[in-house]
Image (cartoon, rainbow, N blue to C red; front, side, top):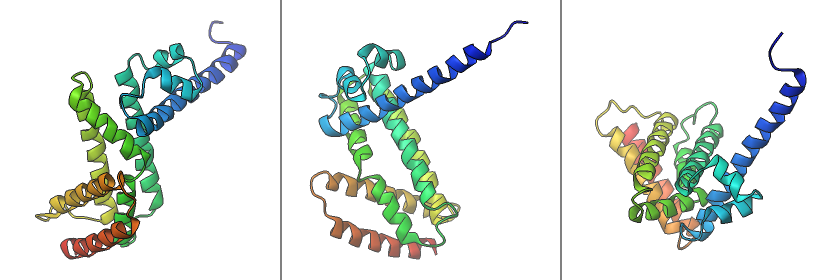
Length: 203
């Protein structure tokens, strides 16, 4: 009988696990490097060293620098989306303040800082721009969908879609401000005010 022996199967699974673990380490290291050093200081070699793998191993998983960094930001964005939904596993139960605060938090961590460096690089790098534009569009749609679900917003009502998008634009603005100064007290006041606005707009 042909087929794969038990020994082959036993060897293959750990190899797949190692490959997956290496890929994940590279993605996490790439995001950390982008957040700390920006695009100019984040080469494949720097990321590989931080991840504890060889440059060759890094290029096996991600043939180009653009492949590595767009995949890294997408990976962490998906992780953050999963974490955001996990905060409210049974829905937000009407606690809009908690939802607004959680959405704002999405834009005040290392992911947003890394994404921002990628956006700036994409504005100058022709090869990078279409990939980052497409990535940002996808991440934006997913974040909008999560916000609609958690806020129990009815987008068939005129103006509701724009209100939710305005909330996300505001959260991004707070994230930009947070790059320079950590003004948590002001941020909390803005979150409270937006909660009141949403209560009026969404009913």
